[in-house]
Image (cartoon, rainbow, N blue to C red; front, side):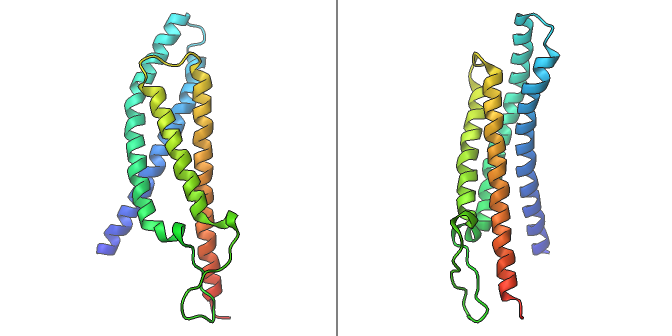
Length: 178
């Protein structure tokens, strides 16, 4: 029963992490693609009013998602820390796991570090765009930059997971009897 609850918690944690990232990326896309088209024929004062109201409404979602992303990311990191900090592959004839020489590019910890550091930059950037009293002078430029950073964060997350699973599969293949 306890294992079932822990599995459910792990799944819920990952789900929240992905949903929060989706909300931030989707909201950024909304601001970049939909709002300019929707307000294109309005006067500049009206465009700024619509943009400001949408930004005000999105601010609480960004902050909520940023906090949840950090918390769920910490929980996932704690759960998988061994995979990121010290990837070990067992040799078939050894009774204890030994370090297997792997390429630096295949180390999941490096990709995890890139994901976390770039993710923090993206969250700070997104939160700062939403927190300042007035939007920046060229809001679409800043939203595009924010979107680009967010997409890089997603790439790093995907790569970190792929490298972690790749090492796991290599370990399983190495341990399998011939």
